[in-house]
Length: 268
Image (cartoon, rainbow, N blue to C red):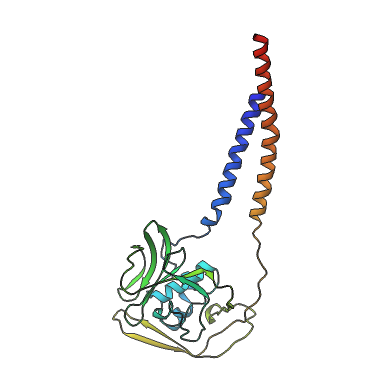
């Protein structure tokens, strides 16, 4: 009987350890890297601001804007101008400066930016492994519809500016979301007519400037705070399992020890 209790307690300890590991690493599993080309019919790539008013893929801004949308789950606040303006955050085009943090260290889902030529280049960080980073990108100059490539973190090439951290924002700055006509939600709060100028580079590196007559903006709505119930559930399970382990293993060990001690005395 004592042996069965000890085995049961050890089994519960294994479950407890597994739950602790799951709890510790759950947040690292939230980001899903893109390992295949996006579907040409996916509206966040084929009908976003750049796809409508500049050019369809292959184009670095069209892809990066769509990928950012995919990562965030809503339209990003990124610049509507050429990619060379994305990292400086200089407020060109119709949208104000964004509130995303910036830096020189790669992070998952970040936008990597280069000041190359007249229009620059942008890509998305999909994975990080030691001193290398894998990025996904589209390129209108080559042209390449979509690809991934691995870069040395310490040598990202000429004109590298840094990273825009999509998943982290300055809390003190207000957030304004913009929705294009192609993906306008039902019950749009307001429609404003403005002029937006965007530039793109063609396969022959010629500049194409497109002026959009209409952009649809949605008044920001306060979203209720989303509370993840999983941490509380995990803690509850951990407490229950710990109580069961303590209640079973301590009496079993104590009884086993006393039994051995009694047998030892009897032998004497």
